[in-house]
Length: 312
Image 1 (tube, rainbow, N blue to C red):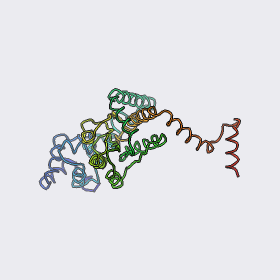
Image 2 (image 1 turned 90 degrees about the vertical axis):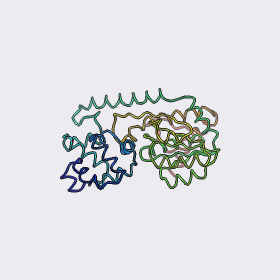
Image 3 (image 1 turned 180 degrees about the horizontal axis):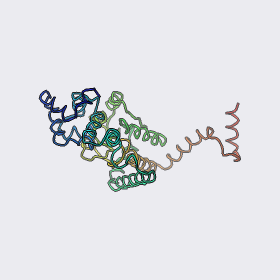
Image 4 (image 1 turned 30 degrees about the vertical axis):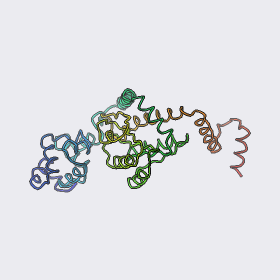
């Protein structure tokens, strides 16, 4: 944050620069003049959508006002509305569900209830015919691409780890150039899944767009059924994000995303029980020699041989 931004309030800065703003930034200025607290409750993509502009324009808007980025703007706004520096940062970055002075037991219970409610909501919103259709397409596919950026990239990696063990030819892409390269060589025998909590992550949308244009069957795992990613995909699986929970939202939504992924994993595993059990047994046997036996436990004959081999 620049020294000038520290001296003047966000509203002062908007008033100073409003006449110099291009139309896209003027739209953002109008939103903030009408609702100064909006950034405290909206992500950068949500604010951009409300103003009818892009996340990149929001970033440029922040810099014009003298802030390094959106997070710094949010803290500045929170300070302007009288919440104080430390409290403002807490509200902007963590949210209102957890107070800095809440008892640990209360934090634990609130956290647990939030996750339980989110998982129950996800289970209630999941359309089983759609889940079965997605699982069946993956089983029949020659190749599966999974796209995810930021926190959703972690979910994508978990998807790859689960499905690869049971014989699915799956690759994960978090870097857009590599993801676009892979998406461009897919065809109608392939499946592509885009994971994004908001459904507005540009890189994920771009990769899934190219995959669809290449003929792949496309799936969105998102918390927003009305998002651009959801509208692009052939099928959508909802992972309900806990809106009141910690920021950033893509991390707080991971458990719901993993619930959807685990459901697909089990449906796929069920579809070919013999192959699944054979592959899981093979992978289990491969790593078994690397596991230290329980103290006092009697080693089986194969384990003794493996242990002797490793010690030589």
